Length: 234
Image (cartoon, rainbow, N blue to C red; front, side, top):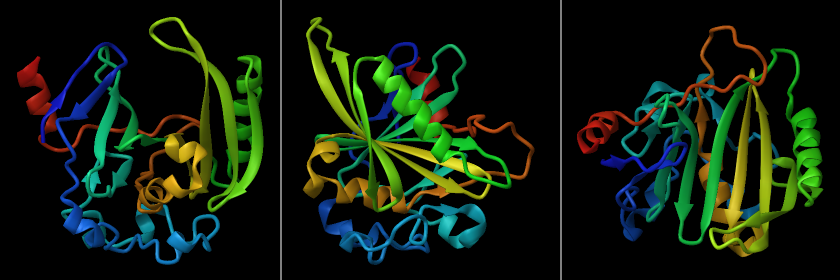
């Protein structure tokens, strides 16, 4: 798997859809993090994933169709691309982006207290920031619980202003918060959302046992073998 760097704070991305061919689609949901019933929209919350690493066995984490990114172990879908937002100055991976056709799913993980989740508080702050930017934020109930629908003004490279809609999903787990942002067509057309939700169900969060301050980002890394390829290109 080869990654290439772009500019500072830009993305390192795969050279193609690395999750397999179309005929392999039936195999992408295997291995413990089952989203059985998720396609029907029945599970709410974390009962069908995403999972904590203590909730799945080692064989699941090490399966060939899983990509170990440190704090997040992901399973994509056929034709889906993995892009990693990398700070070029520090070399740190800041976020994971799964892209399928004209939709995307951004993933970030944070530490949380032992006693309570932080999504409710973080959700209010995100909504306030969207309003400050001149946009709108509305709460809605989705398959993972309460989520936000944001509509914010964005400037394109030509200087034109347009409205961008996104779904921000927060999932409280054991001492962690997984924040997922659905972008593109899947954010506005319900029929395009299942592949993004399917991939989110199959995420495994590796929190670790070390003490961390609430909201501190959980460390992400390039997949095994990708670092060397990136350095060769540089």
